[in-house]
Figure 1 (cartoon, rainbow, N blue to C red):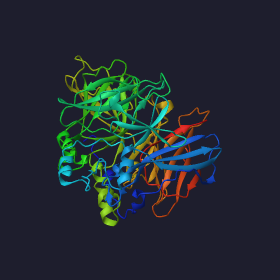
Figure 2: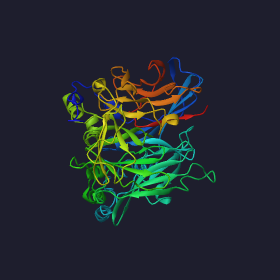
Figure 3: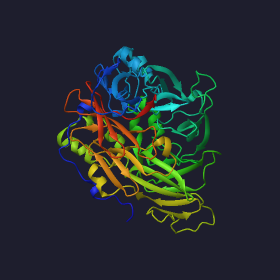
Figure 4: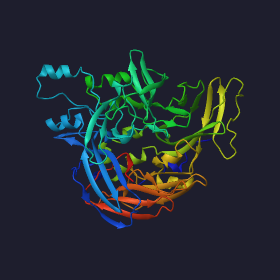
Length: 541
C-alpha cells in the first residue's frame, strides 16, 4: 500500500537521557556577557540571532502543566567581527507581570487553567468561574517581522513589538483592533516586497471561520503596527463548531495553501473550560476518521479554489516550502501519521526518566518530510480515476475522484537513513532566495528524543542526508544565514543553540558551514538556557 509508515519509522528507543534541565526555570541575563569562542566564526556574519521559548515554569507553588505554557524568554546572540555576546530577558507581557505581582498563576495558558484567587471571598471565586478565559499575551513561540519591525508571537490575538538590540518589550499589539480575527499564527510568510500573509480564526454566532490575512509591507508613519491589514478571504470549516487546529500554513508565488487537518478544537469545551476548571488543551483532540484537506487560495484575488485536495489523516506543524511548476503546486511538509504530539508534551512527561521517558517517546508519532503534488488546472473535463501528476521524477499521485475532489498520496523527501535519526522537524530553508521557488536543500533537527538531538541537511536532488550529532547535546532549530556574495543555494552558515542537560552552564552557539556541514566554530555561554522553539537572524551588516 502506498504511504504506509515503515516499521523502521516506529523504531523504539531505550535508555533515553533525562532532559529535565532543559525544561527547568532559569534566571534572565539582561546585560550582555561575553562568550568564549573556539574555532572560527566568519567575520562576515554581523547581526543578532534571536531566539524565543519558555523559560519559567512556575510561580510560587503553582506549576504549569504543558511545555507551551512557560513564560516567554527572549535570547540574543550578537555576532560582530567573529565575537559573540549573549543576553536574555523575560518578555514583560501582561501575563508575566500579573503572575509575578501575585507570585501565582493568574492567567490561563494552553495546558494550565488559572484557578480562582484564594484571596477573594467564596462568592467572587464562584462568579469568576463564569468569566471567559482571558487570552494570554505570553508570546513564547517565535520572532516574526511585519513592516520591518520585530515582534514576538504566540497563537492568540496578542503580539509584542520587541527591540532586537535591547530585547526591550515595547508595544502590545492586538490583531482584533485591525482585522476581524480572534487569533493569528506565529508563522507568517513574507513576499519579496515585504508583504506579509498570515492566518487566523474568527468565532461568531454561526461558528468558526479560517481567515487569510494580508499585511502591507510599509508604514505611513513610524508608530504604525498592523494598520492596513485586511482579511483576504475566509474559508468555512468542515465542522464550524469543531474547526481544525493549525500551527502554520504554506505559500507559493500565487497561492496560500491551508491545511485542514484532523487535530480538532471542540469550541464548546474550550469556551466552558474555565467553568469546568479544565485547560484549553482538553478541548483539542485527534480524529483519525477525518481526511486532511488542502485548500488553495489565490493571493491576488482572494478566491478559493473549488477543488479540494484530500489525503489520509496527517498531523502537520511546519511546512518546508511550496512552489509552482509545470501547472502543479509542490507542497513540502513535515508530517506525522497521528496527532498525539501535543498531548505528550506535558512538562511532567519531559521531566521523566528511565523506562517512563522511553514510553513517552515511543508513543509519540515522528514527523517526516513529504511532498504532495497538487494539479492546478482541474475542471469538469478532467478525467477521473487517473493519476494527474505527470511529473516523471515524482512518485506522488493526485487522482480526481469526483467533482471538485482530488485524492493525493505523498512521496517521501528522504531515504531510509532518516529513520535512524527519528524523523525531522523545525525545517528551515534559504528563505530569502528560495521560499516559493524550486529549491534543493532544507535543514532541520533530528528527533531521536522528545527534543531535537541532531542537525540534519537534506539534499533533495539525491535525497542524501548530512548529519551533525554529538551524544548528550541537543541543538535548536537551525537558522540559515547566506554569505554576502552567495551564488549557490547552500552558500552560508547554520546557526543553532546547543544545550547539554548533563553539564551545568555549558550552552553554546554552534556555527556550521551549510555546504560541508562541518563545524566552523562555537561560542560557549556560561549560563543555563532551556530548550526553546523558534528564532530569526536580524542582520546588521
